[in-house]
Each structure stands twice: as structure tokens, then as C-alpha cells.
Length: 314
Figure (cartoon, rainbow, N blue to C red):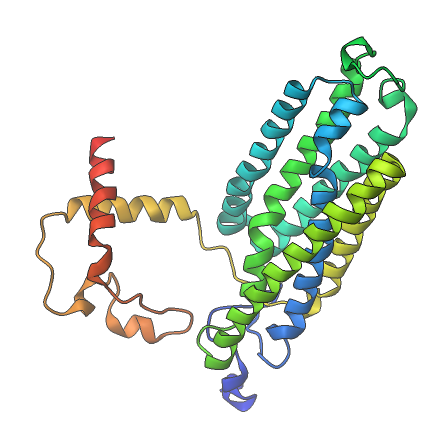
């Protein structure tokens, strides 16, 4: 009765809650008000990340006096790590901490990595002496300590992005209720602005920040992205009172494994005449809050058959 007295139609139907686990109203949380913080965050974060990564090979060759092949290989290894850690970040968010707290903790790690990286390019004792010889082989190499600080900061940064990259876009998507038609339409618009923010931040990094690094100095060239990251985190945190949250639902890998096992076990069962019989829950269960069916389709049978075949071979 409490919900009815306060206007039950205003409560979200997709299972989103506030940080304390209470149901949330559409008029109070979520929507474009919350997403504006997320979109602006992404502009500054992409500026920060690409401000470091875009010119990284040049720093390794010019300042750490590494060969071109070695520098390129080290950057490739780091970039590969940056794209692998989000798997861990997504798992922690879905199975344990939730997206918001995973993001906040990862942001702190991210900022620590950026700060140490800026110090490593600024403090003379953390980098080799300046060398004017065009052949880097004749220049003094970075010491083990100097390399440990620099690469330690880089890979700390990679761990941080592993928790922020997979969760920030889904946090934005969570601000729109798929069970409300107007908000469902707004979600598509959000992703358009999301992509725009990525390209805008990347463009600024690849032009202005790269120019500063090449012509002004690496201290300012790395310091600005670090400040940009700090601003982006503060912007995100400022939007906390407006966010909707999805509670952790357990490991997605477990659910995927269950689907594959069930598909193999039921490989030879005939399809029912009524598609509603394909679902694991009673039809009435899908009318409840936060649940909806994915309609069956015959167009993906070939893909499913191929996956099951691969599972059987493995």
C-alpha cells in the first residue's frame, strides 16, 4: 500500500535501487540528469587515457632510451593488458561489489597509477639523464628501479581501467528503465552521446596533449591528463545522489556454463509447438518486476549449433 500511496507508477520496474537497496523513483533518480555526469566523465577520462597512450612509444625511445622494436613491444603488451583487465572488472562488479563500488575503487587505483606515472616523467632521479645522441644505443639506459617505477605505474593504471572501462557505460545504461517506453528510447540516445564523448576526449588527447608533450614537456603533458582524470572522478562522484543501481546477480560465467550444459543435454529434444514452453520459468514469472522474456528465433540456430559442436569437441 505504501507504494500505491506514493505513486507506484513512478517507481522503476527494472529492479534498480539506490545505494541502500531501496526502490527508486524515476522522477528522483536516473534519466538524463544522472547520465550527464557519466557522459562528461567519459570526455575527461578518454582525454586522460589517450593522453598517456598516444605518445607512449615516443617517450620510451626518447626519454627511456629504448629501441624502437622494444618500445613498440612494451606498449603492445601494456595495451593488451588494458583490454584484458576489464574481464576481471566486469566479473567483480556482476558477482560481488556491484558496478558503482567496483568503479569507485578502480578509479582510485587508476588515479594512483596516473599520479606515479606523472612523477616518474618529472623527477630527474626516476629517469635516465638527457641524451642528444640520435642513436639511442649510445645513451645511458634506464635503471632497474626507474623501469620498475614507470612500468609499475603503467600496469597499475591498467588495473584501474579494468574496473572502470566495463562498468561506466553500463552504469549509464542503468539510468534508463527498459520497462518504460520513453526511457527505453532515451537509452539509445545516451549511447550516441556516449560515443561522441569518447571521440571528443580522444581527439583532444591526440592533438593538444600530444603537441604539449612534443613541444613543451612531458611533465605538463602527463600532468594535464592526471588532472583531467581527477576532474572526471570528481564529476562522477558528484552525480552519486542521482544514480540508479543494479544489485550484483552472481557470476555471469556460471550462468553461461549452465546454458551451454543445458543446451548439450537437450540437444535431441524436439522443439515444443508453443514457443512459451522454451523458457525456464513459468510465463507468470515474467510479468514480475525486473524480468522479461527474450523471444525465440530460428535465425540463430546455425550459430547455436556451431557453439554446441565446439563444446562437444573440447
